[in-house]
Amino acid sequence: MNKPNILVLLPFLVQGALSINVMRTMRARGFEIAIAYCDDASSVYKPDALEDFAADGCAINLINANLPQRPQMLLKEIDDRHIDLILQIGANDLYHQLPYIKERRPGVRLVDTLYNEFGHTVNHFLYENCYDGVIVESEYMRRFVQSSSLKPDPNVVVVNNGVDLEKFSRSKLRVADRLPVVGYIGRMSDEKNPLGFVSMAEALVARGLDVSFELYGAGNQSDAVRQRIAESEARSRIKYRGFIEHTPEALHNLDVLVVPSKFDGRPNIVMEANACGVPVIASPVGGVPEMIEEGRNGYLAFPGDTVRIAEHLSEWIEHPEVLQRLKESSLELAQKRFSREAMLDGYEQAFRNFVNQRERH
Image 1 (cartoon, rainbow, N blue to C red):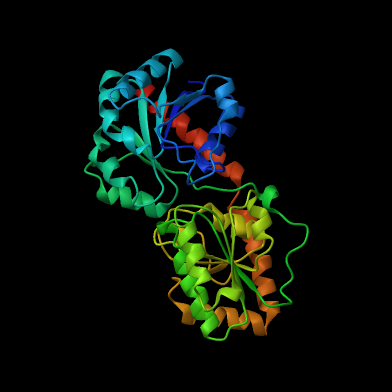
Image 2 (image 1 turned 135 degrees about the vertical axis):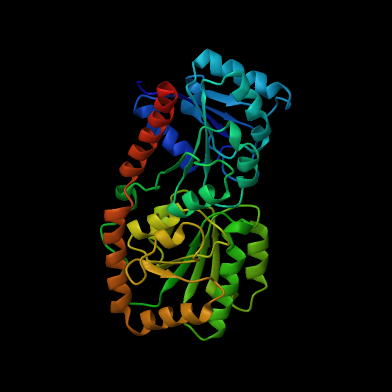
């Protein structure tokens, strides 16, 4: 068939979210896409107004609809828009209503997306019989779904995410000829572990390392992070910069990025950092180990492993040319492995294949 009509289910709208960016590109490629969302998270995250979708009547606001109304509203949208594929992307309030929708529109393909082994996985497996497939970002998550599913052969498709390399490129790498700046960029939320980053910074300062630390981002732990830094003996060396509109601006201020996640999928920030020539020290969780080639674009270490992190930082302080080579190889790896176009092609092919599978049956 030609390009399928897609209904995307989101919990809320966040500016810069990968899911929304992918759907914008799919629209530019000729797909008919509508986005339904359930909650308002603007008090925590900067929202995406979806003005481009709304202008075409393709933004479906379910916030004020009570739970019993939502299935009927979605069924009407499915019929009116001739939807071929429903893509569930973490809309927690809708999981339990999807079997009802699938029973009444069995010809519509229903696909879930799982980025890590926590979050929405309980709901996924609770209702997995109504799904025709699931999209994941890593081989780690493919194995997780296959080993956890009650289906004999779950339909799991891996689409490795990527980034716009040109957006993050810089004319000149930050020269490693002075004391390193180590940073955190991401949501201020428990799973991303910004407080773990602060603890790591405190421990490294206590070890006598002459390094400065910067945090960028917003979220429900923003106030806790500010307070923790204000009360820290290392507060003169740790700066919380808050939300930043353009991630490259933050990355261009850093020499090293730390990703201290408690759990994660295949975080974009690793690829974005490498695309800026910034090596990454990341927790070995989820799909992260698939992204890091130790000694080439960074290292794997939990934030509590301050001995190992201190060893790397000490070497880079004493031998800045080592850090400079790591920056150069990080950029080279990003250019070879983290292309956004390859990711988008993967999503387009996955969407087509899911619908084509229906037609073959």
